[in-house]
Image (cartoon, one colour):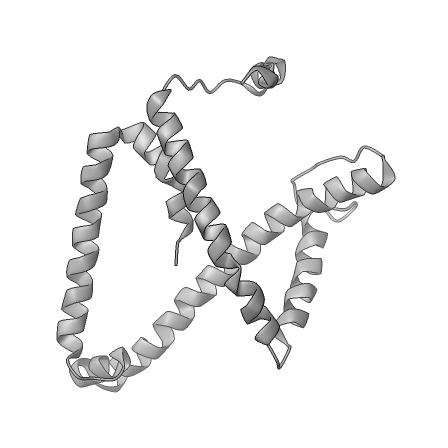
Length: 187
């Protein structure tokens, strides 16, 4: 499973440099590996980590071991929902422009007097509720198996962007006006 932090690695390496980036990545790996080793050593033959917590901290530890992953998943679902909402709103506007041919006002501020991200969040909530209410989710498993292809494409993009960033580090971040005046077809 790849987290969203992986998509920031090219930028991180571009900012820190190749050597420091590799050192920091390796140190992070060592810390993560050591933490996992400590957890495995403490668990021993316990079938579940919450059982290990019960052994050392009693019922409080056991329930914390059950509640903590739920809270972490709630945070992940909230981030997913916000991200989906931020992606879906411009897509709906683009589809509207494509179908009607009218120019729409892209306003990212939450408003109720015209179509905004607020309405997109409500639409997304009902879509996600309907999808998650299905009893037979085999179709989602089949669709999810295509995720491997997208992960491979994401990794290829990250590698390409990283190599490109290492070969050309003359990035310039300017104002939106400078960006609008730039002829991007030359790049």
